[in-house]
Length: 273
Image (cartoon, rainbow, N blue to C red):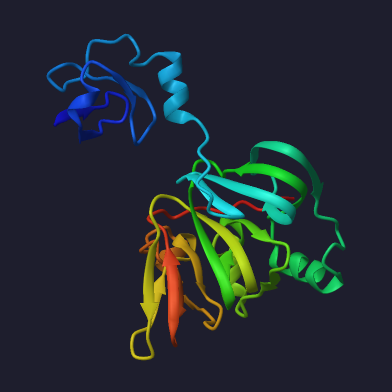
């Protein structure tokens, strides 16, 4: 057996002797690799060439359906109908796709009033047509979730896209102090279909049990079970106003049965005027 060693992605793999002194495609990145008689790549000028770059970064059709991760930070939507996307998240598309900004009364007066009360700043864009759509959000990591009659609450700033048939509503935190937590609001999504959420780096999911509540930082909280209702905990004292507090004055408490998703980053959310 010979040894294939790809300079493009670093893959090493044994291959049959019949490939000695021949050129083959790397099974992982599809770069062209020349195999020497001893099983090592022969000298080649292909490394770091334009063709090598194109092969390593080219779009790959994985056949995963409507929502597909082109990479950890790029969402591919194989569109044939309509989806809702976060405004400004489109980076490229192929085919015939029309983009329409969410209208003021697109989802009725009730949601409009909730937007005004919560200060919700994320605007949705309706993408309609047939083609391939690519979305990203400042290089944040993307996770796809397939709802199957379930519900999930997502921080509005971390919601990247969802299918048009998904039911959604803005959930209001009862305590006014909740509004102080970086302008936090959340969207409840339920039904059947795909949604995509974003996180800074890898998300961590913590299970909430009846005898084990979870406390989180609002600015690091991404999503949680639709059955859970977070309680806002405050620890505001004279030291807080003097700038000598712990920096953890506002917290979210999750009690019951379900899960909560956090990210290793305390993100500040900016509201649009």
